[in-house]
Image 1: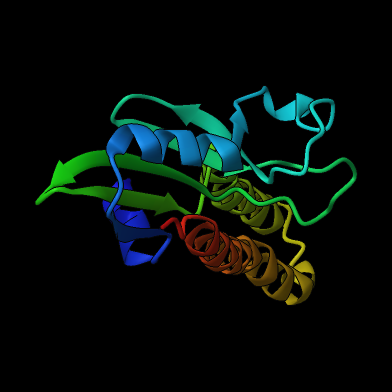
Image 2 (image 1 turned 180 degrees about the vertical axis):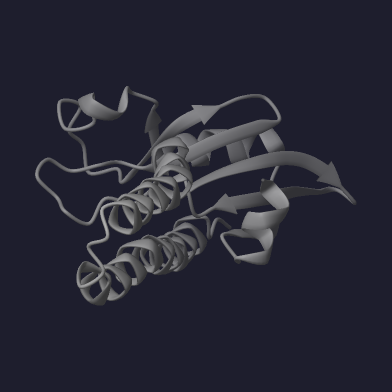
Length: 165
């Protein structure tokens, strides 16, 4: 599945190098990342920090907080590895343009449309095919472009927020 998402360009990576100690880096990243909360409780834990996630000794995961009644929900998230190389802290971040819910939509969407297409053929409602194909194309392609756009926005925000000195 991951190879498919790489071909669709829904997986990206970034590499950062810092002249600070890994422990100092962890302190700085904790300033821009709130502790992970269940998705539906993001709005309850209000703060100015836009990311939430888990930060460990040598790895972390984060995502953007979701806002109440915000239709522009981002499914992008990132996983990173913190390591020490040549007296510098190296950060390797892998950005995913999808989460479990959007992956489910990508899998279930085509299945539902195949079932609907079969029903149209079986019931011999051929005029419905005139509307079926444009609507099916839009509904199946729209999530991909939305995820790709959101991943690009997430990537830029992550790059901007991970500029430590």
